[in-house]
Length: 81
Image (cartoon, rainbow, N blue to C red):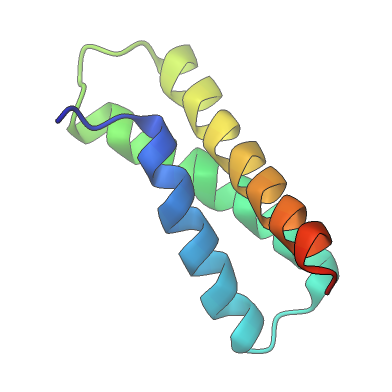
């Protein structure tokens, strides 16, 4: 199985949930998700794929953060919380 950026979104969701339970205000959670996504995407690009261009790892990380926000808000809306 090949690892790709989409698996990082699950990690970001988990880390954002930990921050939420730790007392971080709900208005900062999407920003945290995007920042974590970009940070993890850049880390993945530097460590796992050193030949990956900087722009690609930056945009991949942004995708991860936005995907994590979308999954989180979609589940929240569907569960009615």
